[in-house]
Amino acid sequence: MNMRKQGKTAGKLSVLVLTAVLMAMFAVPVFAGGQAEEESGQPTITVASDCTWPPMEFINEDKEMVGFDIDLIRAVGEAAGFEVVNKNTAWDGIFAGLKNNQYDAVISSVTITEERKKEMDFSIPYLDAGQVLIVREETSNVDEVEDLDGQKVGAQIGTTGAIYVGNVEGVELKVYDELGFAIEDLANGRLSGVVADTPIAADYVLMNDTYKGKLKIVGEPFTDEQYGVAVKKGNTEVLEMVNAGLKKVIEDGTVEELKDKWLR
Image (cartoon, rainbow, N blue to C red):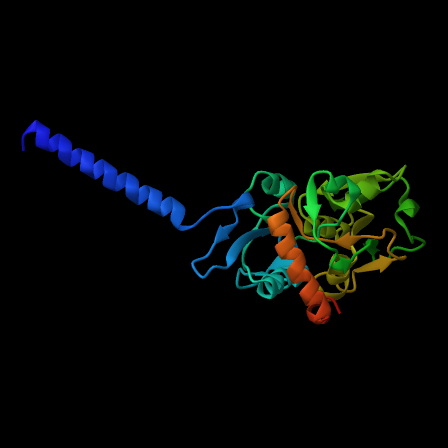
């Protein structure tokens, strides 16, 4: 082949390759926050959860993501007409990932707070969950965090529980990447208490065979909190889809069914 023909052939090949690349790029449109459109016409959103908070979100024996939140977001997607891709994500980077478009939403026992609203948007609330104090079964004369003056109390880093304990004068806060490590230290006497959301605390104390009979919840919930689905600030498209689905599953009784399944 002479050089002129070779050049023409190479040019045609380059055009074909470029065309193929462009077709691949535009076959699945990508929207804000990584949202993608399926061939069926249904959008797909990626939802992150830190699966270390049973019964809300955790990994079962089959290495599957399960729990109240996992079931809920899938039901929300079905009700609102979008597909859900779940992604297990460590808590300490979960909100940064949302901001950086690594996923479209977070459902992970996330308490709606005014401070968090400055950084992200929230769906309508779907569950009430105040903070409670867990102590060892033999602990007496303790009803609240303030009763543990001069002692160590654990909580998961970046949670409203950790924020609360950190503001109690005289109590030493110890933070953990995962709540389960704090519970283990409590059971083994390395902490005097652990603060956690009500449903998670109840699961560890009442349902977990490892700690049943060794730990107890004392007093009453000492914060008034609600969970919501977090989305990137300004991502109204995803927020509207999530809210539409949440309204339907709240109204049709699905949320109550999930409470019976996971929380009661």
